[in-house]
Length: 193
Image (cartoon, rainbow, N blue to C red; front, side):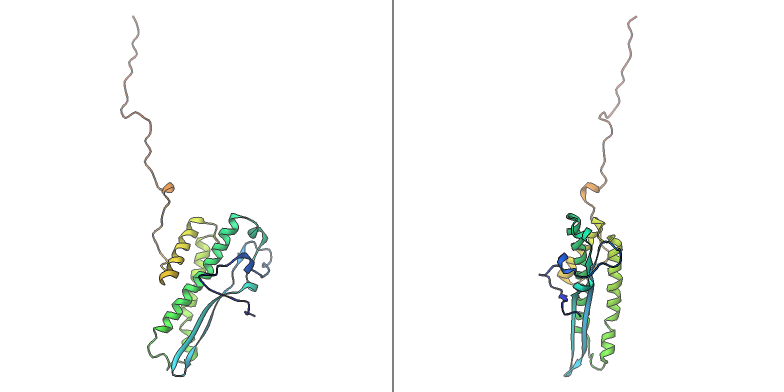
């Protein structure tokens, strides 16, 4: 069941102890099972909906190599948290969509539910893109980009997929002077006669 599901909260970050499932086959790494639980329909003359982002501990797993790897372990749990956070970003989009509907109640419950499907497909695509671009969290620069974007979106509600890449100062091109002499000096070879 999902009775042990962890509901998304800004105050509650994931830990490796939340990953209670068994690793699949001989795969290495970690897997976060994240779900968007929804109920929507017209009741008592008005639209009622509930959209909740959940982390599913018994379907999520991590291998010992990851949890025992110090710094990689910290980066890994941060990567998995972003998967959870991305799902919350899209849950908020779905809630906003329902809140802004004009005259929703002539629609059936099924039609109202289907309206969220496009956003859920987009979430699935974004999760895959995140995984690929960050190489499962191993590309630190791309991971930092995604972390900033998702944190900003959670703060103001607008996920911007394409952003300006911030290049660290140490990686920017620099002009380097070659040699220390601006103009060559002529040295004459005078021989005594």
